Image (cartoon, rainbow, N blue to C red; front, top):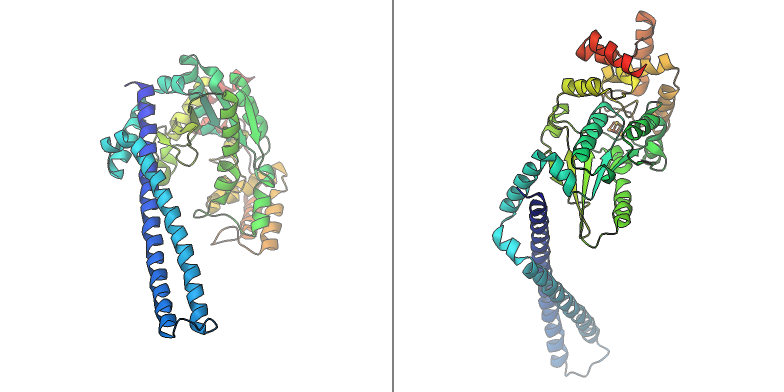
Length: 410
Ligand code: SF4
């Protein structure tokens, strides 16, 4: 399969889809405007007849003012019809321009089917995909999945001879994150010599909660959309402009999403068209490069390639990023709190105070205050939690692998 042809076909189908949608919307607008126009015409006729029946001279009568009002509505409706018709003409021209692609893939279903098929094939050819891209952006949280995604992306780009296209971007959520996350993300990018950018959404996670007086939850994950997804759009725009191309740029956005993490993530494809960010000057693809890896395989990649991971994984916590994740269950939150106690971090109190201030419980079923109380009780019973560097590798791959890994770093 020719990668460039596949990308061109995906773009053609996207344009045909957009043109078809615009055309249908314009048709609907014409029908609606025409209906309004017809209704106004009926009113106008009615008041005209009325005035005529009155002898056509009574300019001060209520009937006469109603006629003027109906005439005004009629004029407005006529304007609406003209505007809607112009819109329809433009949409028809667009549809005509994309007629070949539209005729070839006439229904929404087969357009989606062909796009999915092409993207799936492209995902099989990582080096070709890297070669075809103009810009490869790695969205890194500095977590274990991100570093493996970065390592694999860099490998594909190196094999394609285009490491210069790769850049890393990290969204810093402020004091809600474990200490050292931003610095680690920077070191991970520096290891490969790729440019690194930190995006700091104003106020961070805690500022967002304070403003909204509400915690995000699984249904309204504003933290990811507002703090992670939205700020990346302007960066992509600026980077594409920097390229100075006189054609549509191919942008590949790499994420460390794995199917094994959740049923929702399992349904995500390895490579997807980002229709929200794609425009006439950039075709943006989301590349879930490690989608098929298990957690064990991620740790194997980390150990085999000596990738630096955050020490928080050694405590037994499965994910990095926010200390208190709104998606986490009580066990995870209790462990996170006990780790905060051990590290003497003030975050539990900060969160509990915020929870009291906004009067909204961190989770629907329990408060953070309850989590903190349970953590204190467990600390009193079992003593503080302890861990050693390399425990995450010991747990997943055994002590010998952990020792070899640690020897690499020392
Ligand atoms: S780690 Fe959890 S709380 Fe933090 S941004 Fe991601 S989903 Fe939201």
